Structure formats: C-alpha cells, structure tokens
Length: 200
Ligand SMILES: C[S@@+](CC[C@H](N)C(=O)[O-])C[C@H]1O[C@@H](n2cnc3c(N)ncnc32)[C@H](O)[C@@H]1O
Image 1 (tube, rainbow, N blue to C red):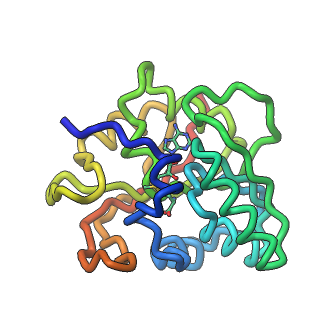
Image 2: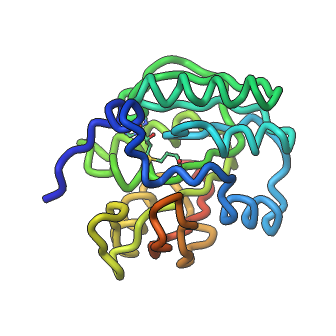
C-alpha cells in the first residue's frame, strides 16, 4: 500500500518529481489531432500550472483546481509571468460542490490515478457534473502494466473502463510515456484516455 502523499508539503519541499516545467506533449498531441477548439477548460490537479498556461496561450479560458495551496500560489505566479489570465482555485476536486459555469474540455495529468479510490466514484461524478453536454476531457494516468516505485500510481485498463465508463464514453484509450522531469530519467508508462461526457 502506498503512503498517502501530503501534496502541499511536496510543493513546499520541492519534492515534485512529476513537474517537468514543460507543457505535456501528450496534451499537445491530443488537442491538435482531435481538433479540440478553444473553449472553457478545466484543469484538475493543475500543480504548478504549466499546462494551464499552455492552454490559456492556445486561447482556452482556463479554470484550474489543485488541493495544494502552495501549488496554486506557484501556478498563479507562473500565469502572471506569462501574461495570461487563469482562474486558479484551491480545493478537493472530489468534494467540489461550488456551482460553476460548465466546461467544454478538461485536462488531468496525474490527479485521477491518485484520487480514484475516493468513495462513490466521486472524481468521476464531480467532473461529469462540471462538464457541458458533449464536453470532452483528457486524463493521463499511470499504467498497471508497468508498476514502478517510485513512479506514478497505476491503473488497469479494466478499471479505467469501469470507473470512467459510468459517466463517460471512452473515445480513445492508448498507452503513452510520461515525459521525464528534472532528476527523474524514467519515462513511466501511462494511459492517455480521451473521454466524452455521456448524456444520461
Ligand atoms: C502528480 S501531481 C501532477 C501535477 C500537474 N498536473 C503536473 O502534471 O505537473 C498531482 C496533482 O494533483 C493534486 N491533487 C491531488 N489530490 C487532489 C484532489 N483531491 N483535488 C485536487 N487536486 C488534487 C496534487 O496537489 C498535485 O498537484
């Protein structure tokens, strides 16, 4: 059993082995190849905000949520420095109950695989509620075919299909490799999962 990470302490101590400081090439690929047009976008577990900044630079109106207040502080600074407007919020996505405008797209690199065991499939229910009808999202998660400690938490294809399938149609599920972060040479195997909200 993995020890539960204290996210805020990780940002305080600079112990952030997932933080490449570069926009995710997989996010860039999916946005381009699937023709996802600028719209209201939500980044879940945005960390220090690199991907939110990239989305804002592409014309998306970005709202980004992270549990760790220190991550949100770092992300705010990054957005200011880059000259883009992003709404950063601190909170637990699984308990998110504040009303918000709905989103046409969401992005998650490394949050779903950490919170997916919260009771009641909370992550999936909250994200689906926040998405507009027909809204799409991209989730990047660790892949159980190559468990690696240290490395991201992992999830199997069957679990992804069961958990996300409750509220989303899985448009594309493929393996990819996370890009390496400074001091972490491994390119961990992941899942790239493009979903579309089901009209239930
Ligand atoms: C592996 S890090 C990835 C950060 C960022 N997406 C990146 O790629 O650099 C996971 C992020 O999810 C955030 N997180 C974890 N649990 C969360 C929750 N319940 N609600 C919102 N954010 C959460 C953490 O604070 C952390 O910033």
